[in-house]
Image (cartoon, rainbow, N blue to C red; front, side, top):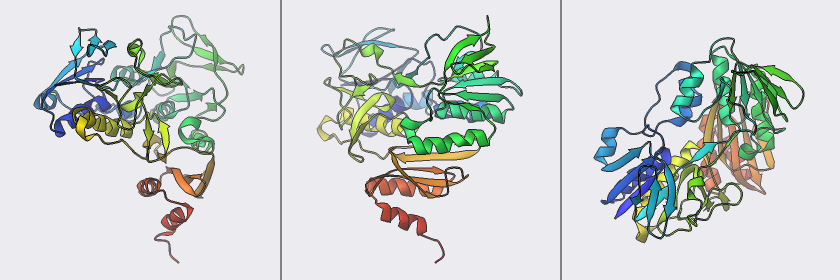
Length: 399
């Protein structure tokens, strides 16, 4: 029996490790488009940009050999023949008995983006190295997108003495990830740290001939820029699956899975940023783009793919974090409209915000409250109520 994992980043790596832990003794092939072994991608926009700290690889070539994994790096998946159980790649066909798709997402680009020197994105080690080489004191950085990547880039740029400005098309950033009220609270961190934020605006025209010199916004404002960093989002990397018959979600072309991470094709599973699945912990179907889910879901898919007689559903309370201007942001659960700042305030340097569905806690955001975050995550998993949150926050306070 052979297992093929498409995607050699975090989810794919954890899948092959988990398959071996589950006792699988057959052949494992790990196919990845990047030439690098899996690495700690969140550091690209934070520590690596600020200090040049080396990127940590999550597994060594020796470790993969010890796991008896055939790693085929720099190889792109080009198609899938489910009837013949063959993966088509840029280096030839790879047969499989079980297959896991962990191809993640690819950056999106706004329409009309010109080919000017100084317009960059941030997804790979090479992208981070190219951006870091341009981050110097006084350099004007235009960041397109006020999401987590864009905000982290702006924070890192300011730490190096560069002058970032963020532009986002939405009136409130991060609504899909954390909701309107929490998005507004987090956006205020930019102003408090001297980073201009232009909302409800997009770039109408880029200025410059061979290299970028600035941009005119749809509001009419002209912003000079030596560097433009594009961080307007990403889409599931599933184009290579067109024609395979696999079910893709109509909203974003992510892969539709069941609770066991099985796709609509026999023997094919999916994990990480690319996968939609029904999450029983929150009674909701979802697709998550974060480090924690990629690691855990990849491991779960790896075990399920090689133990067909002992499948277990994947369920989790989502968790992610981000660091801006030396502040630690953490979010657990799902966003919603019923938000209460149960400690601190939206403009404070420390707060806890609860997201309610009726009396039930379904999400929570914290700023500089790391000790509370995992307790809130456990409350969400246990269907905690307003009373439980009140008891948690009052615990340890003098009476």
